[in-house]
Amino acid sequence: MSPSISWSGWISDLARFPGDTYKAWIGNDYRFPSNEGLIVIHEEGPVGHLGDTVRARCTASGKGYDLRRLRAGANAGGLVTLEALEALEREATLAMKAGVHSHTLRCYASLIENVGGTHCRLLLCSHCSTDLRSHLAAHDDKLRPAEIADAGHQLAFGLGHLHS
Image: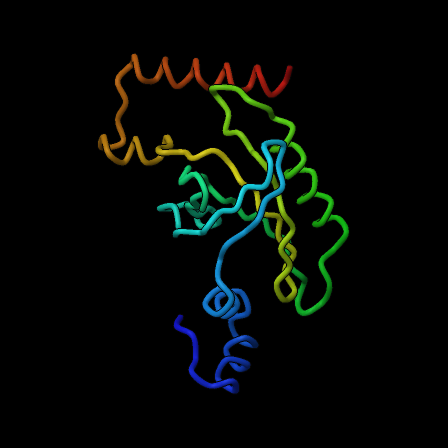
């Protein structure tokens, strides 16, 4: 979607596409307070098949991140339920508490973003260059036995860390 030229067009677009219109006119830079100081990132674009994850880059260091959006929407024009908000908060808290481990994605910081009737938590995570689905697609959905064993070890180490 491109920004409209007139104010009336902008207001009309804002009513129909609140998030897209806001980003097109205001920009898509975010400021994440973290344990490492303020991280200012610029949203770059979607990550393949992961619909709620986009690539982002630190405006100061150039370091790449993945920006995940966890959403809780309103029911049929109503309000977001407390249960949905609590589930969203639980997932964001778990991501932040996962800590640093070579077999888990690190979550550096989170922000709250509310647009229209949708409550959203933005999670600033370490850049993930590949995932199992992409790897399988690149290799005709086949893995060698050694690759299967390696994936199992990585999964076990990651789960062991998360449950420790």
